[in-house]
Amino acid sequence: DAKTTQPPSMDCAEGRAANLPCNHSTISGNEYVYWYRQIHSQGPQYIIHGLKNNETNEMASLIITEDRKSSTLILPHATLRDTAVYYCIVRSLWAAGNKLTFGGGTRVLVKP
Amino acid sequence: GAVVSQHPSRVICKSGTSVKIECRSLDFQATTMFWYRQFPKQSLMLMATSNEGSKATYEQGVEKDKFLINHASLTLSTLTVTSAHPEDSSFYICSARLEETQYFGPGTRLLVL
Image (tube, rainbow over all chains, first blue to last red; front, side):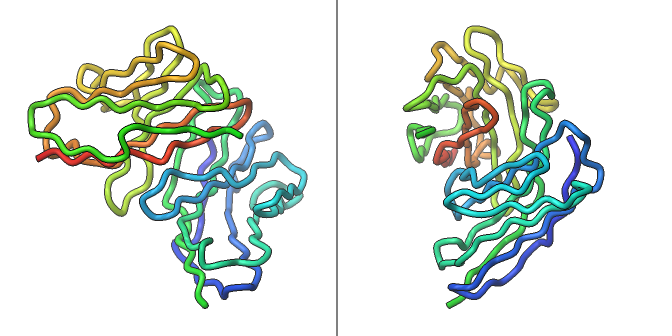
């Protein structure tokens, strides 16, 4: 699976949109981009995933560049409860075992 | 939907004893479940892939005789840490695959004294 690069940390203001970048320049055509987050001492929570089109759900929006080499997760109105480590993962659905490989993620702190 | 539970949420045991952790998919069937381990301030590391009705597939460096995995039904996988030692103290997290997505349990914190 392709490797991803994320900033190690970022601060966001409560009520404002939080834009979390992810670089995956070696992504291949059959690899999806997944986003999970992990709140302290809990299991990861699925947020969203996409292949090449932008996606939106009740939690967030995922913007994937046309060349698919990077993406941005957007939390439209950050709240204090969005403080967590956010993981961007690329994965091929056809890879053996459909494994997820977690990198370091971005530690997001939402401030009042 | 897509809820995964784990039991227990935390456990303390003596060195040399065995501990069993259960992972259940509550509202869906999962032919594939995964077990991860997470040490403090580190990311999740995949330990093994659990397939219903067949042997688990272990990642390199994970001892299959120490971490026994059983996936006897489409909603239950168990991880048994045998002869636990203090270095096995960690946060153990399972996930279950539903279609394209893995859904994670809340984790089990193991402390071996």
